[in-house]
Amino acid sequence: MKIAVIDGQGGGIGRVIVEKLRKDLPEDIEIMALGTNALAAAQMIKAGANEGASGESAVIFNTPKVDLIVGTINIIMPNSMLGEFTATMAEAVLRSSAQKIILPLTRSRVKIVGTREEPLPHLVEAAANEIKKILEVGTGV
Image (cartoon, helix red, strand yellow):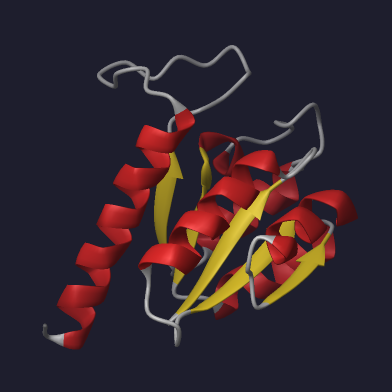
């Protein structure tokens, strides 16, 4: 299985996600860091991603090639992350046949009703648990 973790700006959220996935998932799971910029990609690579790339072209090129995409709600919102995440990038994520695990964190003026505000570690834990369930179903465990 190949998982893309997408983040922008300083890559802090992506770094936390990659660290958790690397710790909790089997070693044969490939994690790809897709950053809106080189700093974000580098932070995720330092956290344990197998490979990484940055920029609009990297997101557009790689999202169709992965099995799972993980990131905040910003990765499906055009012009989020202070404009770093373009409409074309958001469309590429949404068009990908990969399953998406979305964390309801945003600094934009979007409020997701029906969700509780949780700290990042709790959301990442929930995302990791969902990915483990997906892996169990996919492997017949």
